[in-house]
Image (cartoon, rainbow, N blue to C red):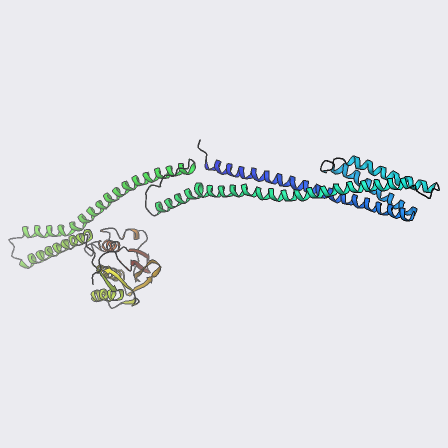
Length: 474
């Protein structure tokens, strides 16, 4: 029969509470009995001391025959009788001595003998017969001896009870300890371990790894949860494949649309020029015909540029790596585009000279493209900053290209890395530059992100590792 995790925990704690209750009840009973025994011993010691005092005054009387001594002895005997009767009434069920009634009888007999002595003295008998003296002494000795035995026996039993209580308490801790360890192990193997497995699996799912969770044979909610999670993962994998396929189709549609749109304009211009030439082939205006042919040639070059960019975007190049100082790479990129930077744009370089990494030379193309984009974004003068910094905790570094241009509206900022997406005028860009940059960064195990505010400027941030997988070429 399968027991739920709630049922297992409830059962474990019910056993623990039940065992603890039994131990507490046994401990309470032992303490209660021990308390009763201690009170009995205290009362019996009071009884024994009262008898001893009575015997002392009895001896003094037989030495001096002073009536005051026998009166004191009689008072102590009466006190002893009251104590003994109280013990019998209050603690009779807990005392070891079961013949206390007989002790009361002996005590009453002894008291009566002492009372007879006082009566004889009052009647004028000043001399006590030897037989009476011996009888009283014998009664006192028997009473003292029996009470001494009772007190001694009760004390020994109490010490023995204390020892047994300590042993019982110690032995009672053993099952509590075993049960506590068992509950701890149960929680570790039946609760903590499955929860850790599920937590790790959910973390992997959150990071995009949709691998099934290993089965858990616990026979409770965790097993059902893992089954449900695996079903969810299977469904996510199925939906993910469908989504990827849909994205591929959408990308292909955008790519096809972009290619058609970009090539359509130059083809239309070429077609128009040829039609005019055909219509006016017999005309003698050679300059006009030459202009038409030159325009058609430019449109052909434009088409070739579009196709070249498209091939660059789609090409899988082998990554050629080289260990370089990043500042040298930046300086080389700036030298390449320096002629394209207007005088009203100031270029700042904030790159430490100690950043050294193994990268492909295509990273220089990334810097060139980002600087070129920044120049195009600045209309009436401004500033471009190239900044870099180490990120040792990530074993890499980041660099930024920051401009003070027009900025990118938030409604299109998520599209800027899409192929053929551009905000430039027709004929002034293919819309493939940032897509190519994105691919180069991925090829280098890096990433690129953008932040922008309209009217204030744009920041492109690229992150790269210090070391790339592959052969190092010097």
